[in-house]
Length: 255
Image (cartoon, rainbow, N blue to C red):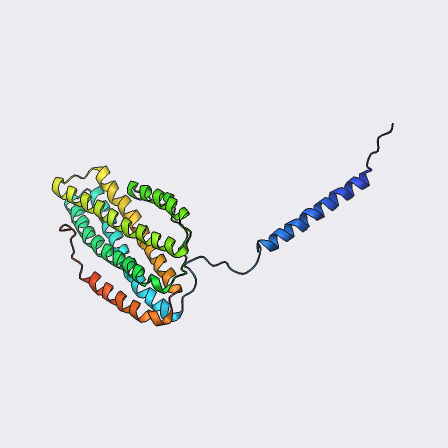
């Protein structure tokens, strides 16, 4: 019995038809998934704000970023003086850092409280993308985020997930500030300038700066869905917050 065998031409046609089929399937999937379009994809919390909302955001955003920058400068100078070594000047810069940390913490916590208060105006608000554990350095934050990641997957309602995000940020500010104050008081009492103690300042500030930025992102997300009639009350609360932040004591030792 003789076996039938395709000629090279027939084999080539099979390859062409197969290729055309794959191209057609790819085109359908591409259209279904809306891939390859020229329209920009908006990320949650980064959509353009209306002019009146942008002014509100800029006022608080510049305040938070300014204090965070000053805090970073003080701590960098403290490390430079430590390396000199001029330990007396290094400690003085740490003292200045403590006061600036206290001011920034009060502003960030106040902003988070304001978000909670005005969340009722945005019942369908969606939280920004999940926080990533790998972005943080301190043990206290990585442990907290593991619990948060689990809860965030269990909570389905977008508004409840946003509330969970705000609670995590508030708890992070309190925990990092507590650890910073503990390290500050320990150094004040013992004058311990060991690398381990200085490493704590570096880790705590890195995570605190990230939390401040995440708080601003959450604030921007709230503003994007804030109705115009509710903007007046929000502006008043933010004005009070900024005034209170300017009067925050320079040293956190008494807390």
